[in-house]
Image 1 (spheres, rainbow, N blue to C red):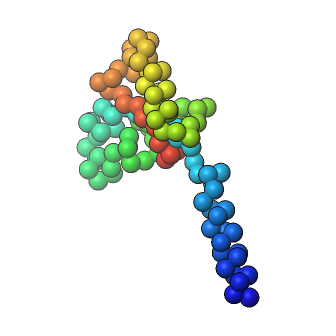
Image 2 (image 1 turned 30 degrees about the vertical axis):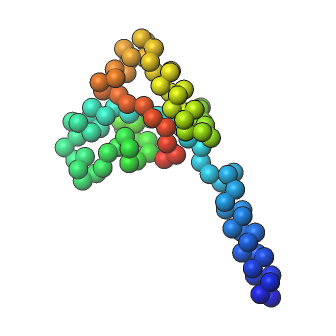
Length: 102
């Protein structure tokens, strides 16, 4: 009985460690000017760009998903550095990144 219990424990441990159960990285854009710099409650509520998932000031590019965080960051930085994107999302107001908090 003890061997069966150990076997079942080992199988469940392996199952929960599989990468299938892990979330992938998703690129996001966050208006840190509104969410952090102009937010009087940021001290008590935390930084909505870094601490939380999607919010009124942070959105994820849902159709993209990456296993590698560096690749995710490279792609979102390249996509948002065009003149059109910089006009729509100025760098002095918006930040980009990748996380698993979606």
